[in-house]
Length: 418
Image (tube, rainbow, N blue to C red; front, top):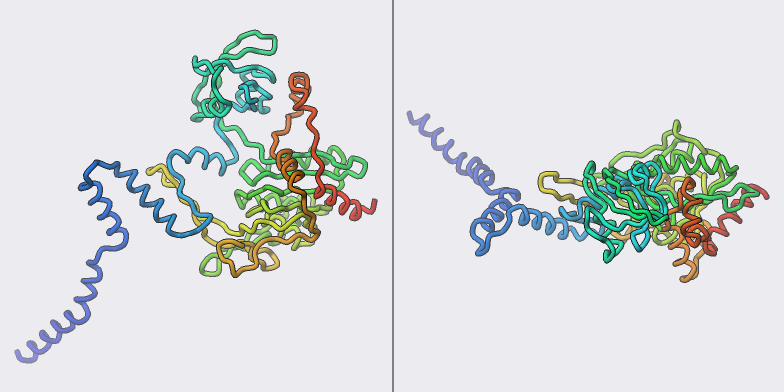
């Protein structure tokens, strides 16, 4: 009995010394439990009723803000449509470019507006029965957007002043991520192709643009990534794949020092020997820096212009479909094939940015004109004649003086030995 009592006492002491603190620690509320408890208290006891969902979203927004991450963001319900459209490279609407007065500049090829018979110069006078005479362009554009499959009814007047009505089913319409595409030096076959961003639609647009330039006799390319702030890494890797013969495009480095590698697909290589000059400026960021660095590190391109922005990070994006919000925050860094970290803002001790092989700057006035030109929506070939007849000033627009583009062409002259 004494022996049993002894071990009972030892058991009690062990429980008090070891098991007791362990159980007490497990009984303490976790961070998630504390947040839930505070949320419940505020919902139940605040002097004025508050929407529980709105309070939860505010808590999420505060959490993201506390990271002090210049790239992190909380995307609320009211911003979700724009967020999805930017990510996908599509918007939901009727597929038409409009002028300031609500007139149709041109329908996008294959879009709902074209299928409904809209043509350049037609004027929208009412949307779903509401007259638009006093509406600003932004109000008209916002009203034309909506859910996929929803129908909007337009009252229009054509170029012969004949009224007609069109009921159009809204659909996903690709945004234009490939901008200026042309031969800038036809005798030598030097082409210019501007990429505005990297979205899901970009690769198909890029392939189509290259095919068009090939048909015109392209022998060298100025790949213009000025004002390209990035987008989807997968799209950037696929663009690089067209100009490489396989190989490393970039490495992803997370907080554990790993994250994976992104390789160019050798089967997607279409122009592995095409001489290329890449244009960058201070607005070139993220995916555009990844592409430029990969092409340079593999000896496929020279970089010309000014120092890039230095956004060398990739993000974790979480979309809460039930809560109607999304969050983005930095998950790791992009590292070039040569081992350079591109980020220059989140961690100041790193090198960051891409310095051009050939530094060429633009004067302030010329830079503004170039940016405006690169931001314009090119007129589709099938509508050019009608646009030129209706809006001759639009069709007659010419590219501005561009010292950086001229320097890139001169560099390619040397590469082609012409």
